[in-house]
Length: 266
Image (cartoon, helix red, strand yellow):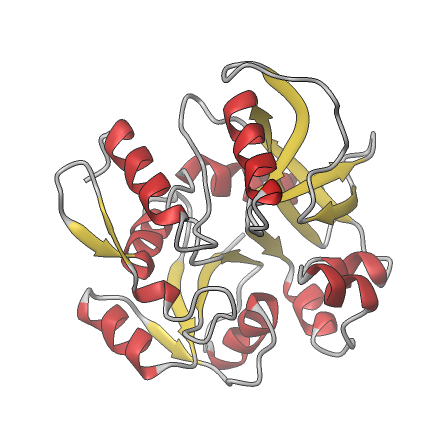
């Protein structure tokens, strides 16, 4: 199966304008933009036929081309990354069996998260959409809870059924657990990793649907699939000692830089 990775990136983020061009320093002190680190993460995934940056902003496009990325210019009318990925297909001369949306705010995404996700879609021919979920340890869960206490919108959590199909995604921390966990303790909360794998038909259907009330309330694009009754396969991935965090707010920059340093990321 042929695989395309698209990295949607927009400048006009409500919570963090210009986020793709924010620089992050790694273990060596070298500063790289968020979009560059996301591109590097995508290029490290095995079994991928093409990687593109999808944007509507010339500043992001110019920065991406400067480090050698292939860029697809998309419409500013795209409401989210899924719509942007659907438009990318219209610009491709090639056909792809699987399209991966590697959102440009998760530079710490390990290659095996994406590889396992693609394999999950391959192993489940009836699944139209898949996304990774990561069981949180206490340190990550406490970070999510701290963000909510301080009024920040942090990571997204997921709950799913026995068939591994998603029941719901939320920017609140779900399911509720009143327990206190140590930093290294496993918890029952799953962090939703902001990556999606779609079959092209699912993308083409998505852009024909209006956004529903849950998508609008939570600001989570994947809820459009659930509201339309399209199952979303949750593929559990393993951290293997790696830390994972998305860049959602300016306060996340030092947190991610500390993780890059701790993991020895240049």
